[in-house]
Amino acid sequence: MDAKRRQPIGVELVRRGIVKEKDIENALQYQRQHPNQKLGDILYQLDVCDPEILIEAIADILGEKGILLRGDKIKVKLTDYFSLDVAQKNKVVPFEVSAGRIKVCFANTTNTTNMNAVRLLLLNKGLVMDSYITFEKDIDRILKSFEGEVTADFGVSSENNDTAIGLVDSIIKTGITRRASDIHIEPMADQVRVRYRIDGELFTAAKIKKEKQQQIIGRLKAISNMHQEKQESQDGRILLYDDYNIRVSSQPNVYGEKFVLRLLKKNSNIKDIFELGFPGTEESLRKSIQKKNSITIIAAPTGEGKTTTLYSIMDYLNSPEINITTIEDPVEIRIPGLNQIEVDAKSSFSNSLRTVLRQDPDIVLVGEIRDTETGEIAIQAGQTGHYVLSTIHTIDSIEVITRLRKMGLSDYDISSTLATAISQRLVRRLCPRCKKERLFNEEEKKIITAIGEKYHVNFDVNGITYDAPGCEHCNHTGYYDRIGIFEVLDLTDEIKEVIMSGKSSLEIRKLALQQSYKPLVVDGIRKVVNGYTTLEELNKKLLIF
Image (tube, rainbow, N blue to C red):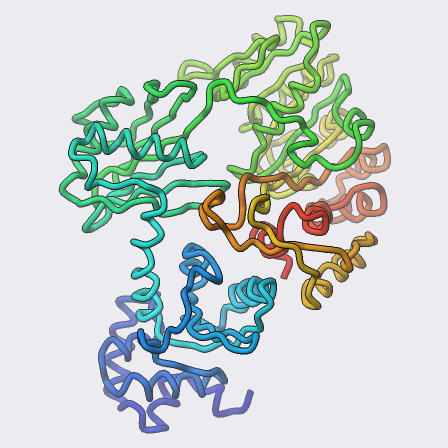
């Protein structure tokens, strides 16, 4: 980039005679009050010059192509190329396509991560992306115009539900039908927004008139056994729907009280551990989890399926000859043959665990190791002949060791008791009804080959992959349900010795990679190559490009 382009945009615009110094001063003063807005967008809002000349000048300064994005310039339908949620997240609008090339407008061309994600998504559809820059205000205006079209697909409408009872019932029943795990009911400045989390992604389902807000809040509080008069955070449950135990959380915000409903199916079938996507064979699974005098810990951020994996392992281990006791908050699925204990406000994991150890258990499941006390008791249980399974919040299986250290557990206790650490993420599965075969493109081959070389794994990039165009079955997302990607760290004697000597997680990782350990990205690429998911979906979780 030459010296001219290293000048601040404001200075360069003044030098070119596009705006005056006074305009820049006013824009900078406005920016101090609105720090998240870019200078060019502020100048556009202040209407200091011809907007078409302004965006072309800004683009030239940045070394990009610029366009003033008006309605007549948009010659394609956005949702033919990607979902509204992808467009909103990346602040992007496609506006013209011709001869295998697609013109795409971004509000910010300095965010290369977002641009690369969109570029790869379009490459998967056989299109080469030409990027342009435009004003964020115009991007937002265009994306907002699509919202009504997208939300209508969910079938939630306040117009057909005159009463709060009917409206709330429609929201919940539609969420159940659409496989939502959570329903967000959010008061906004001029409306109430309803969103569903489906396969880990949030989708706007409805926008309800503001005057219905208090009726909705009143109805939700009534059916979830909350105090009507309290304007503070509350927790409750809705038990009106067959087969569902709905946990409700309320939280006041500046526009009213927001509600989040977690939809838990009471007697849902437990998936086989391999159906969840667990790698390896049954023999390798037994090696990792059928142990005594030890602990197995599953690690992942919130919402990545740790509990589901625990249930699958419990179901795999369950037999009449074994006494299995679980301590959970809450008990999400009831499994015949298990002794399941629910932690409440009067108890804790640590207190419940002390009691359970006097109940002659063979296997103990502790929902989560949250503190030092629970960790110490779990270690003691593992050292005294029990097999303990639990979860912890951390980014990968190696960092389980670091997290336990930070809780104050000794290197001796960790190395002598921790047998296996499993880390996982959930990625969306390709929709079986609309996925279309194609060959990997050159960009994808390059990414996959580089990862394979780094971790000494051969991936077949000459096979078939799939596009995710979307259909009615998958709410036009291209994905239906989710699959896990896993990494398994079995603590060998060599790794235990390194832990005992107090070595860092970097040194532990280096040794593990020399043995059988493979990081999450390896299993993720296998799932892509085997046609379960896509490279862009994997990138959302692991940021591999």
